Amino acid sequence: MSSLPLLGAPDKKKPKLTVYTIEECGSCHLKTKHGFKEGDFVHKREGQCHSCKGNLMITMIYAEAVKVS
Amino acid sequence: MVFPLGLFPSDNPILGNPLVSIAIFYGPLALLIIYGQRIQAWMILNDVSRSVGKLKLMKEKGRKEAVEFVTGGSNAKVDEFAPRIDQFLEYFTIMPVDMDPSGVVGKIEHIMTTRDDRMKAEIRKLVPDADPVRASVIENLIEAASALNFIYKVVRHFYLIGKKTSSMFILAQLQMIMPMVLLEADALTGAIDAFKKAQPLGDGIGPMVVGRLMLDDEKKEVARETVYSQTELKGRKVYLLTAKGPAGNVGQPGNGIQKMVEELDIKPNAIIMIDAALKLEGEKTGEIAEGIGAAIGGIGVDRFKIEEVASRHGIPLYAIVIKQSIVDAISVMRKEVAEAGDKTREVMERIIEEKTKEGDKIIIVGVGNSLGVAQ
Image 1 (tube, helix red, strand yellow):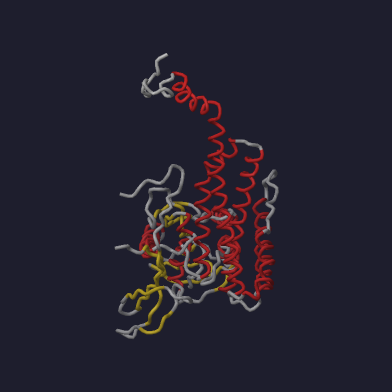
Image 2 (cartoon, rainbow over the protein chains, first blue to last red):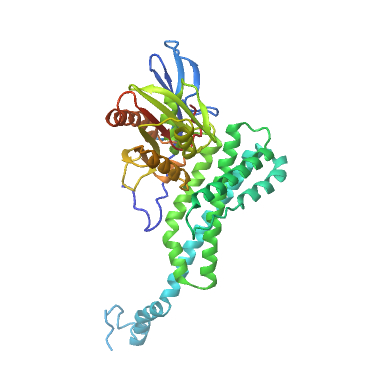
């Protein structure tokens, strides 16, 4: 059970966030997820899809909390 | 006299003495009654002092990151750039007098535009070869560092006043608002990392949803750092407007809509605005809500202009907001917010179908910071 924060003090426990880039193929809608690299931006055209040769585009860049096992 | 609680054994020569018992029991009580407030003030002072220390660290981090980004990590350039950046951090804006409020929005707009122009010109002078994305990142970094600097200085001011006047009430008020102040400062510190890497912010969900619809169409600049395009959706003529990305801009949606309606003669049957909105504690991040009115934050100039043009021409204003905390809004976009994009589009299409008919004209505005989001 997590302990309550001290009265009036914000909870100091912050989840560690990792930023991911999601690419999607315009033809087969296959989504791939990889770590964010500098120069990535949403709606950037990223070449061809490996499976259907369709156009790949970055559709999302988001931060997600890392799950601690 | 009998010791009230009978805590001390009567056979002990010292503790058994009723006077000693009285001193041990009533002494601290008297001390607390006489010096209680001072002890409390001392504890508050310590607490506030720790928070001021934290704010100082955050402020220094903001400055350091801005200097590092501008110099590109080169120590040789620090001496050249650091004094200029320190000067930026101390820039101030004097808001116009509002005793006679008529026309104050125009004055505010003028002052804010001048401030913006000056900042951009200074950055161009500082880093002449910076591309638009890098220049906008520097601008955003300086804004964040400047906000942290301001927060620190104001809090320190009241802390020192409280200390100087030994006023527990000033310190207690400071202590009461400190969790909120720290939360905001924390959010700004978190934003610095996102700015540096040009990652989309939570506030960028509006430009993300609208930018997706603009991808294959020709984009025209309609106001400063604001673009629009035209497309067909559900049999309606749709005009999409948002800040120009992937640089970190918020654009001028107010001027954009005004120009589209009054100069370009696009008379829309509805304006739909999509923006990030601050959630209340307990509400879910990424939750979508619909409403009526101009969904746009900021100082109020854009909202005023949009409301003006909408009411003058009788255009209904519909709002879709994606909820998130202040921390999420200015940090890297959270998964829940990014995934709300598709649902937002569904809501937008439903509003289009319900509130307009085929052949109508609609302006859809993606409000927010376009950092890391292209069209």
